[in-house]
Length: 273
Image (cartoon, rainbow, N blue to C red; front, side, top):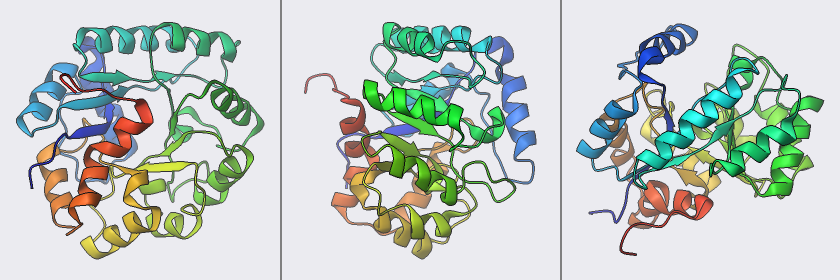
């Protein structure tokens, strides 16, 4: 089947001068994975995505210190503008910033469409008070928030903590990448699908899960709450699409995962439609 659109809902991009160093840092953090990385630049993202038939990308980066927040958000906003409508950009926050409300004001003023956090890289627990304050602000503003979920090496964003956030903020537009829990996928699928306010993506998951298990997890959430994502620059988009096609989903499920869920979340309008 030829799908109407194809959105990659999980892409990290970096300025050219620091891209290779940033990608190296991510590879080191997840050192034992069989990454076949791209260089992390927006140029390579557009090139590889276009060749694979992807026509829209959700892009972001993560601040590792408070002073990076402004520069990262400005960079993502500029790339979103320069993309001619191809990119939907998310801002970042840092829990040690002096004024989270002001940072969120800037994210909205820059025309960005949500927030990205990473509890392991930014060193916080997803249900600690500082994080809960951010979720409250995002819920109040109606801003989607992507938060890295899951890692069996830590206990920052595993399902036992994610459920606390989902219960506390029922109107929050919460995106849990990696099918809701990287490396704890099946545990997450037992705990999180009952919460209506979580959407997940497929990034950095299908390389490890056998097709039957991945299909079962996706159906636990329902395809209307699942988005296709590659975790660029970590995995080739063509390989991720091969993994997806091996799942044997219905046409309706593929349409939802490949673009409809994401387009609805971010109100993405395609040219001519």
